[in-house]
Length: 206
Image 1 (tube, rainbow, N blue to C red):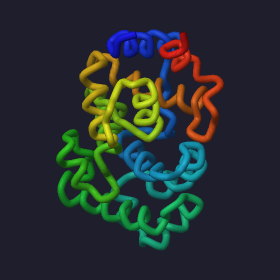
Image 2: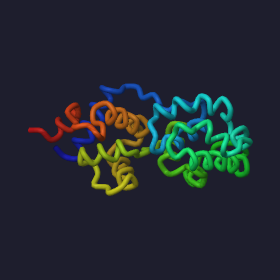
Image 3: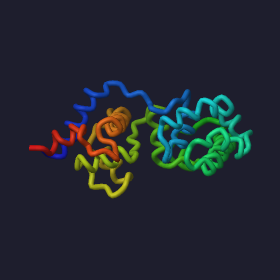
Image 4: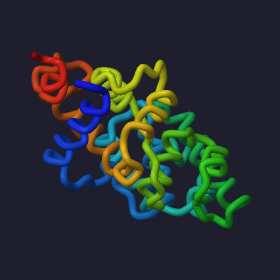
C-alpha cells in the first residue's frame, strides 16, 4: 500500500466513524476557545471542561480576565496542571489583547503566537475552529498516529504538520485533525496495546 493509498484509507475510514466533529473543548467564541486550548496543554480536555464554566462565568472576556489578579485566576484553574504558569499567561494574554487588539482575538498566526501561552498548535486551533481558516493543528495523538501509519517521518510536530498538509486536501484539514484525535483516543490510546486500532491493521497486516 502506497503512502497515498494509506492516506486515502485514513480519510475514508474516519469519515465513516466520525461524520461530525464537535470541538472537544467547550467554548462560546474565539476568546474562550483560545483560553480553553491554552489550558489544555498537558491536561485532558475533560478536566479543562470541568474547570472552564466557573472561569468563564467570572472572566469570559479579556476585559474581565485582565482585571483579576494572578492568584485569583490560579484559584479558578488550580485543578489543572501548570496552573501557576497558565494563570500568569492568561492574565498577560488578556492585557495584550486589550493593548494591541482592542480586546478582539486577532486572525493571524503571527499575532496569535505573540500572545503568552499561545504556541503554534493553539494558534492553529483558533484559526481553524474559531475562524474557519484551513489549518492542521498537530497534537501528540496526531503525531503518534501519523508516524504509526507511516504518513510522516517527522521527528516533531512541525514536520508532521507539513507532511499532513501535503497528503490531505486542504478542504478536509479542519475536520480531519479532529477525526484523528477522536480515533486515537478511542481506538489507539498511547498507553494501550492497539488491539482496537483497525486502521493500522488494514494497512500493514497481510
